[in-house]
Image 1 (tube, rainbow, N blue to C red):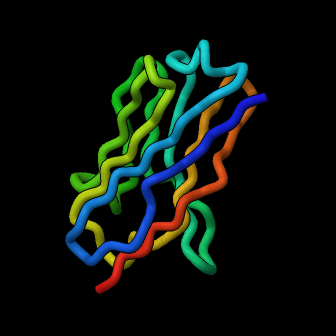
Image 2 (image 1 turned 90 degrees about the horizontal axis):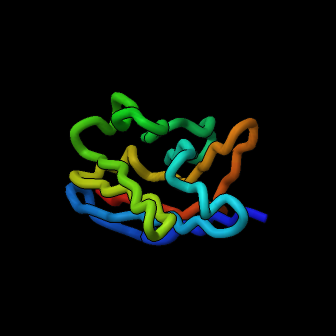
Length: 118
């Protein structure tokens, strides 16, 4: 069984920063480094969208709306994925989800709320 647990969300003023963490545990953890990890977000009334992704062996990719402000990283020794979010904007308000792709399978965390006030 694979578990992804996000943390680090909260309420912040526009221009502020937050760092999200996603801890991965379970059967996949010993091969965590070889799998694709990503952060998605879903705002009220909108579809879930990809924010940032690290594909095995490649550089990170970002949605245009967060380029230059967000940074995705991974600590393979700790089986953890991070999302550093700087210069936050009200439109970044959403539930943020961690995602791990291992072969044909996708695993999701429960999500963490990020609210940016203007």
